Image (cartoon, rainbow, N blue to C red; front, side, top):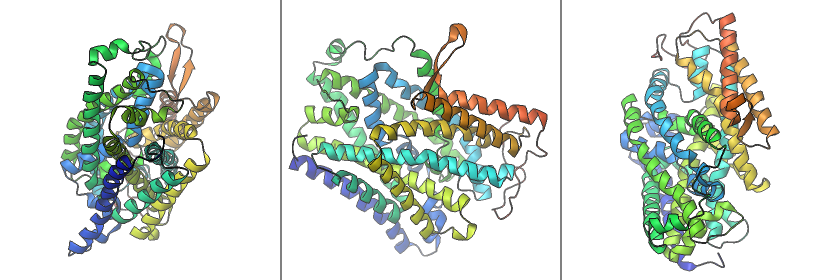
Length: 496
């Protein structure tokens, strides 16, 4: 990291710029070739016309689920805390049966009703404008620090190349802004495969070459600090509950749900739920990089630099540049989907219907990215991480309205609003008490220990919803036609 290596910088610029150009030109090419108006519509820009097949959906959903910050943060957590950092593996396994069972039903409701966001679906189910606004605002608050983390991811690798000052942050912001503005959802959808191939190459080469430098995996584990790969006493419960709460929250975020709603069919989603665990295998290999960094002698007080420093220690400059480009592209793809998902919430659920247009969606997505940029500029990177963890607690409070709302039980809008308020206040309050840590000590006699704050607040939320429902059930459990909103079928598919 001493000075700029021209080989590393040149390779990085080539791959990063090529991805931006390809993604940014896709929408222009589609408009040129299109004989109709579909390529110019708001739905085409924000949901890809709801026409993505199995392959594109697989790369898109995987691309916005496994972000560049995953490549940086998971090894950093393993580097700092050992086996505790591997909680991301079981949570990504738990989430796929959830996708298989629930998301095709959400997709069908959204398809038949013309809905583009979780707040749209909730409004149709409960016929409550207040609940719609609450769900939309929750999604916006939760996704903002997520976008900020992607900018931090790009900034981290560009800084590792030796560029000084705010240049890395300016590069990250301008790249993301142009990529999203010009390409819409088609840009990340059709360039996600570039991102995945680059990351696969970087990771597979790393987990093959780095152990060879250390005498093989046997020597690697022998030389490792044995406190790193093993869960310490008392970590079992936070490990398990964080995995569960993260799995339940994963597809409530605007960006992950956007990838689902853009699919061509319910079968496309089921197929993806079957094959997406392939990403978990790669994630396990990525996590191993944190252990390898210890053995390779990487020393840093900034854990986000663990992977860049490891690559620079082991690989020649040109391949380090390629790896950094893979990480940066890995931030570009999900950050674009996040901005588009946030823009959908604003234009569909917070602004009057007359303001729904491609231009306003682009302006909103740009404003969201500016907000994320301000977070990065004026907040310590650690605060962005903490706020993202807090966002996970907050987004979980939309689980009852969106997921339990699929059931035939007659939940009322009042019950859902009360549950959201109590769950949010409870969860945020605990996080503030614990200095924004995502776990809280819960005394339960012999089973006492640290538990995921998000899971605890979700349980409180559901209890409140259940109590109010028992006292006063709703008059109807069918999806209704909200005034001024697209028509929803009176008998949609539900969970039984």
